[in-house]
Length: 420
Image (cartoon, rainbow, N blue to C red):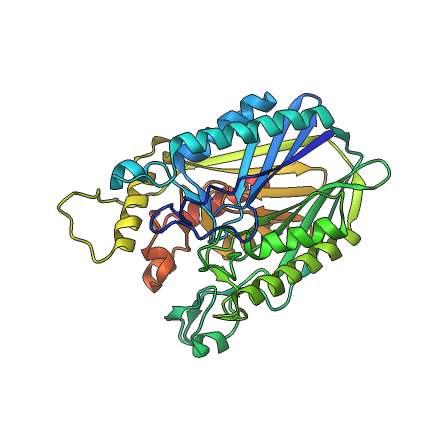
């Protein structure tokens, strides 16, 4: 198997706004946003796995990038996986809401140009492939980072939301709650056991420094910067796991944003560094991509009308996003994929699944290495548990258009992927 890799700056122009591209223009850029791509060529079967410093890609924006990358590397669209790390001082590109809200968020012309540049970088990378002799994997527990943001009372009722930079001391002092504390790393190595590229996975909302109106890759970006200094040739990539209901809210400062970025970036960097130094290695084998689909269980979504009077602009935006997802015909089907190469397994899921789905996946293969990345397109938004809808809270009420059937369907799909 051969490996190619590429990295391209995808920071939007300063005249763009953060998030969905609405509101005031950004004040600039704290640090660049990167598209990092790994291409695996297994006797002509090419797989491209990418991690991008964006909050999300939805609907047509995601599919246009997938299509251009597939054409560039001469493979099927099913073998293109694009993950958004989900930092919140970064773009969340949804071109459909332009028509729904009669605004221009990010221009289609700019997006097509950026997709073309990413595709050109991928095609160029194929001229510089390296032979993969070994794969490696490792995991370790991180301390003082993730905490469940759905804080519950002792009787199991919902108490409050512990957001990423929680200022409520009562919520901060509540227990960590349900998380997956393990940082997992997979790597590809050459004949001399030099690391050619690595992918690391951790389940939490990644942002700890958002709100400064500056484009930034936040703590994961700082971690990648530190790793590129320590391991100059290893091409580290980061992937957010099933962190839909997980943040750093218990541990992050509500006001020392730069301090948060530096501190949590170092926690991630140290953890990944430790994994890279303790890899369990095996000879590289051929890879498989296993795919499972189900009909997405959707709520009824009301269309926005000109005469609708909404409480605020956030509610209007949320309604527009839900409408865009409901109206995009490809969203009728949810597709989960698993990469398998020897004992190395990685599951890629669209949307923002709750961490319980990641823990369930681990329970299916308790003695094996298996990692998970969410946000592989954000079309399906929050994916709560069935009980979450009765409990209430932010996630099942906003930016969520699934029904409680999602838990049964998604868990059944994970069982199929893992052969259970």
